[in-house]
Image (cartoon, rainbow, N blue to C red):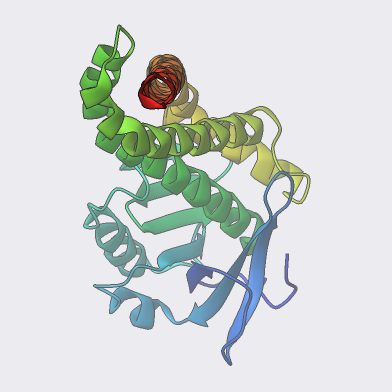
Length: 269
């Protein structure tokens, strides 16, 4: 965690995105390690500047100290701004732990007495995992209608069905990638990142439980298992028929060649 995050007890805001810090004024505010490394760069903003960000794909985070250090009107405005975001990045939720978190879409508010970097680390890791699970859900929703064609190909197939081979290959690759993404999300739920401070680890675990991440992943994995089995069986059927079809035509060519040879020998004086 970068030491440039202001630890002073005053309201602050951050605009955060994935990727190494490159532009002037952006700094590294969080990292994830194994199994796939991911970094998060942030830009420090005033609360007013953050409130003006109505249309951005970046994560907008408000961190405000509990008590008199935060004007009540400022707290209300920030909370209303967070709740107004209805994108799918994070589920709308509010949770009072050692800090109070209000999350919705790509916006978040933390009211805490702890150092700001702990709240920012919690939100960054939670938002990243929430986004990744959402991507898995969207991709699975795209692939799910394919199960009907795949189911038909798990039975006997014919020459006309070979036209599906490329699509089945693409489905198999996509499903394998989704399965890997699910495994990584499971890993991150089971073992919080060692880079997280202890308080942030506890907060991350509680937020993930409230968001039902594990329940969602379990349901996704059951659906993925069906698609995996369907892809594997469909590939076996198509491959077997392709080999059978190739061997059949080879046999026909051999028989035709032998027949022609016999005809030529019969006509030879």
